[in-house]
Amino acid sequence: MLDLLNLTKIQMRDLFAAWNEPAYRVAQVDRWIYGREFATDYQAMTDLPRGLRERLTAETIIGAPPAIAKTASTDGLTRKVLLQLDDGQTIETVLMLYPDAPGSPALEEPRGLKRRTVCISTQVGCPIGCPFCATGQAGYIRNLTPGEIVAQVLHLARGASPLTNVVVMGMGEPFMKFDVTWQAIESLTDPARFGLGARRITVSTSGEIPGIERLAREKQQINLAISLHAPDDELRDVLVPLNRKYPLRDLMRAVRAYVEQTRRRVTFEYALMDGVNDQPWQARALTQMLRGLLCHVNLIPLNPTATSPYGRTPYERVRTFEQILRDAGIPTTLRVEKGIEIAAGCGQLRQSKK
Ligand code: SAH
Ligand code: SF4
Image (cartoon, rainbow, N blue to C red; front, side):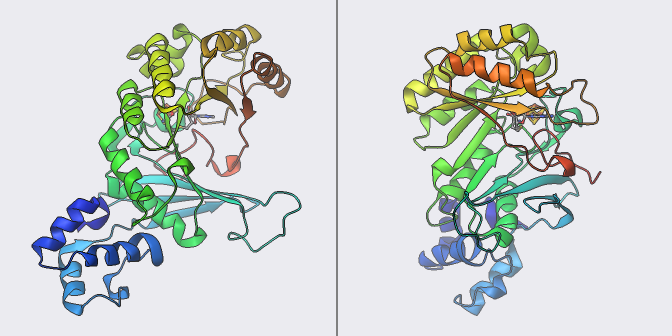
């Protein structure tokens, strides 16, 4: 059945026009779905005429994949849900709550928490196959639909509204099917729908160049993050196998073009792996590569996965690596670890319960 979450605004308008419904009904329905109650049932839409509610019920659905497993970290600040899609496939989606800054009044959670970020998936599994990532090691099944991507946000918004940030950093390579990811993002940023500011959305790619070029052309202030993880092709070919298709020289050229076109700062993600990519000479090679670029490096402590052949870099070496980047004038931060004990951290998401 037709899932309304899969329709763009224009497609919704066409559908309602074909049904001889006035155009303002579109905005009304959208408000119920994205903006007011996050409704999944047309009967709740009390300001719609009964005939329309019945027709919607008979011919369409509002996708709401049920959570078949839920886990929360001991501090309650990270919550992971396993959602079951129509064809039985499952995906993980994570909610991360960030406590108030020191000194601000403590309010009830989750409302009182400053940042409520959802991390969403774009594919069931991932075809890129990075060896340190549980998603990549589990293989690839299929892309999600725009509706299935948006449904993840709506699911978690029900318990933690208003959400403040969305990161497209869950399972899958979001730029493999750019149009799908983009349609989902448009539903999130559209003021008549979810209404999230573009600057509050970050998309992370393993280096799919055509997607970076497309994002540059869309005049929206979405944040771009690039999973770098290595300063040379030899190593990156292994760590991020997409590098064999889009080697660093081409990738960096695309990123520089993106920054020139958009004037926006790009984030590079770099997961530190013990003895693999964490040596001082590699930090220096990285500073060479990023010289003069409007960017920011986010160092990620490697999260354990069942199949990863790599270990985590000891803290001392993390600090050394970080200092080399900082001394070269590159803004560098260490990613806050969240949800590791419930396997909700970066690279730990999979399509199963265990
Ligand atoms: N597939 C996209 C987006 C999702 S992954 C991408 O790779 O960019 C989000 C980030 O977590 C990426 O930078 C990814 O490389 C990183 N990551 C994957 N596995 C990890 C692990 N085991 N520990 C820490 N970070 C990991
Ligand atoms: Fe895919 Fe990203 Fe995992 Fe690599 S790190 S396998 S691109 S999800």
